[in-house]
Length: 141
Image 1: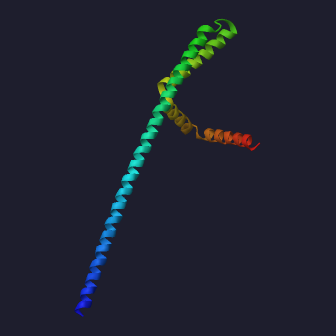
Image 2 (image 1 turned 135 degrees about the vertical axis):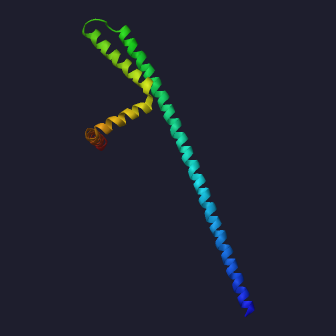
């Protein structure tokens, strides 16, 4: 019987060691998964930041171009009469829009649109439904 008890203790000890090893393996796997998740999260965040900065630079460049185009239209276009008034209006609008894009960039524009939708949620939803309907009809035919 001593052998049976000794074998039983050895088996129990081996089972306990295997449980401990499995527990450690599970903990290591969790740690590795957590580290990989954090690395992916940081990489995605960096990519989004880089894309946002690129979009801001592009919007700023477009704003500068629009501003200069507005100035050119006002300088080179008719100065008097109905066409002169229209030229000044178009030039001023392009300058103001260009200045806005130059200063705010893409992220500022998104913030403004978000705030506009937040203040006017029902009209925004209705406009979205209307645009979706038009796109659906266009693609459906």
